[in-house]
Image (tube, rainbow, N blue to C red; front, side, top):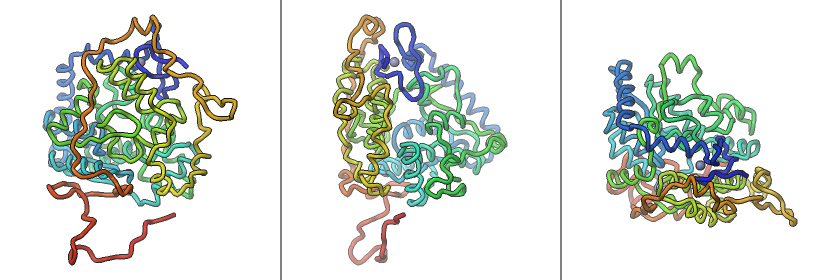
Length: 442
Ligand SMILES: [Zn+2]
């Protein structure tokens, strides 16, 4: 396995990497542009797009869409669109149902502090279960519905509401592996969504599995070309116009808007993934089983490129990632209605054999590890000097963690000093009528 001589990425990165003669990956090379490009000029290019767009939306209630999910770069994207570009966005949220309380709280807070309208798609629980079971059985993928919903629903809303402009935050494929340069100003396409965002699996591929019909999969079907063209839908990535630094941006959002952060099971990054029970848990564990690396490698790589971590420090962090089972597995299995045995049968052997092999006891072991590539002339030659420390802030929690270990399906679209969700524990003598309620099953 070849590893980048500057960051921690292996050659089996699923987005595809190429290495130059110094062994530096395409992701690291494109990242260098962040310190070369004239970013105030690039912001003006973005403002030109906004001015152009004004012609098409005059009279509309909303002049653009911002897809949000309460974590990641949702806050910063809305901040830029609302406060820097002076637009009135419609926030569009796909509800994956794997929500943590903090995720719902951050989402409600987002709509409140930016004072925005938000539409949410919350699909039938049994439908999401069946889709998840189907993608797990056929593709070994538990997260397809989350990403497919997140990449599809905003585009459907753009067509339905006739709002042509969608603002996404980072272009993940360029930021991680340098698929395009910033100056290419690449925009959203269905092809990139399917091939790289959805692992090559479209909604149509799932029809027929677990009895899923075409109409049930409609929520995940990308609008047709003629619909996109009729409205002139465009998806713009802010990271092509603003120097992207996720850590700094989150810290700005913590300071300005009270974004909450939390410790994560499988990464040092306390800012991302906190909205989801599984993103930095079982979902990441399965990535590790498949590819031999996980989120912590993504996060350390980013910090190395931004000169806040040395490569050696990154390797030490990755080393601590054990094959330990994440705590959220039980919650997920209860939800998806698989036994532990069924789950293991679906996953255990889905390994990239370029990185995994079976040892004498028929157990899987890594063939190779980044720890074997700590030093070398090339590594010395291409290394970046660390210029600042890498400390992630842990905010004070508005309430205790998700002790009941249940997904929180929904909250209000706003927050006040008392609450962000539907009131669950009503006071004696008041509130909702008692009802017999049973969790829906297959
Ligand atoms: Zn690299």
